[in-house]
Amino acid sequence: MDRRPERVGRAWLARTVLLGLVILAAACADNYPQTTLNPRSDITRLIDQLFRTTFWWAVVVFVLVEGALVYALWRFRAKPNDPEPVQTHGNTTLEIIWTAIPAVILVLIAIPTVKTIFKTSLPAPNPAVEVDVIGHQWYWEFRYPKLGVVTANELVVPQKKMIGLRMWSADVLHSFWSPQLAAKRDVFPIFSQTKLKKVNPLWFTADTVGDYTGQCAELCGIQHGRMGLRVIVLNDADFDKWVAAERVGSPLVEGGKVPAAVDSVWKADSIMTKGATTFLTGGCISCHAMVGTPLAGAMTLRGPNLSHVGGRTTIGANMYENTPTNLAQWLRDPQGMKKGSHMILPRPLTEDEIATLVAYLRAHK
Ligand code: HEC
Ligand SMILES: [Cu+2]
Image 1 (cartoon, rainbow, N blue to C red):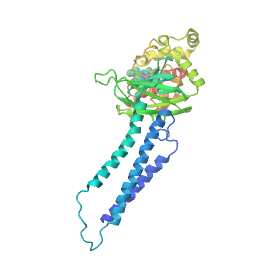
Image 2: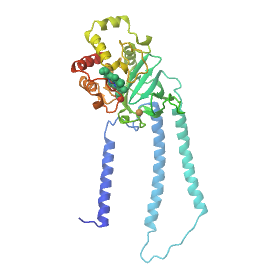
Image 3: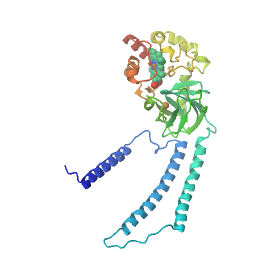
Image 4: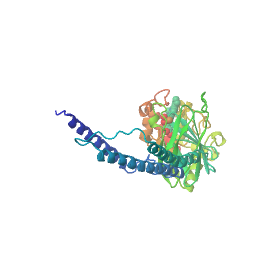
């Protein structure tokens, strides 16, 4: 093989260019959901504007500086038999100029930056819907204290309404981030012994109905990468319908009590009664609040509230589609489905129990 330095150099250049092209092509993929460059809410638009302002300043600086550099390299390059050039040491005027210009540019960038930081880190001025966001290893809990809803992993909100989030963690540091809808914001463990007893606010107003993804953005353990979320934006009528359904058996509405009318319908349904029994004997109750069981009203169990899990589009924090097959496999082998997760069954379930539980969980919309 030819190992002359210029050949090796050229091979590296070719590889670098190729890698660059691959990265560029990947960036062009359409419908890339977790992009900050396609803002769909008021707060992400503010951040995007700031990014673009800073970016264009950087482009101008880059072109001027690199242009001057390339011009100087070419114009004053050494030619054969050139005499030694004049040696210059220090030039006060030049030094003042090249200190002053960057200083002015930095101030011009700092003004919108500081303004945006202040604006985006305040609590929501007048939220239409308030949600408490609680990070857990490795899923998200969403509580709507005023609407009486407790759910997980899918933050359902109405469009064009200011949503006010208050965020904390039940265990370690997490960070809430839905790139198109809401800024990235740290979620602190308020019950820890550290000094970080801080509930962080965040607000956003979603432009349009849609389904957006998000992700924990602070390394928080083995399944950090699988601590996803969805933000589902509905129109007002659909949102009201969703709230009404979620309120049935919510810990925030009469401590999880089911209205008598609903209760009698459920009691007549064999899947509901058989399922509730399996939920107890299978040990699910020790970690999950569930409507119609003695711990329906519990707020601080290890796992997500399952009272309306049948209505969620995904399970495992946006990891799997919520289908009967995935749900069954989740119950058959939770550690195989999400290694290291805190769902550890006290004993394996029989296939009969799994079938009962799948039907039972799916019936809870
Ligand atoms: C030791 C505690 C524990 C036990 C026991 C347990 N779970 Fe879980 N479960 C969890 C945790 C924690 C999660 C969240 C896992 C994650 O996404 O990281 C979870 C998640 C789930 C989910 C997915 C929910 C969602 O919205 O993503 C379902 C469904 C579920 N469990 C059902 C059950 C059933 C049914 C049983 C009983 C057979 C059971 N679990 C027993 C802790 C437990
Ligand atoms: Cu996390």
